[in-house]
Image (cartoon, rainbow, N blue to C red):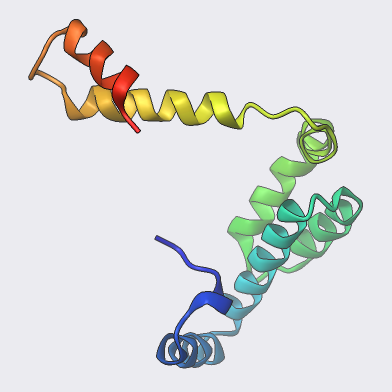
Length: 122
C-alpha cells in the first residue's frame, strides 16, 4: 500500500530522497503526482488546467503526459467531479466489496451464502 511521504519513517524518507536524487525523471514525476493528489484532495479545480499544461510540457514523463491529455479530453467531467458535492464513491465501494467477496468465494458456495456474506461483511 502506498503512503504519503510525510507518513514515512526516517529511514524510508532517506531512501526516498536518495532514489529521487538519482533519477531526475522520477523526481519530476513524483512531484507532479503529489501536486495532483493535493489538488484532488483539496478540490482545487482552478489549478487543474495549469497542472495539465505543466505535465504535458514536461517531455520526461510521457505516461503522465498521456494521463493529462486524457484529463483534458474529459475536462468537463473532471471539473464536475471536483466541484459538485455529489459522489458515487459509496456505491463504488460497495460494488468493489461485493466483487471481492464474489471472487473470494468462487466455486465454493452458492448464491445464498454469498448473499449472507455481503449482508454481514464489514
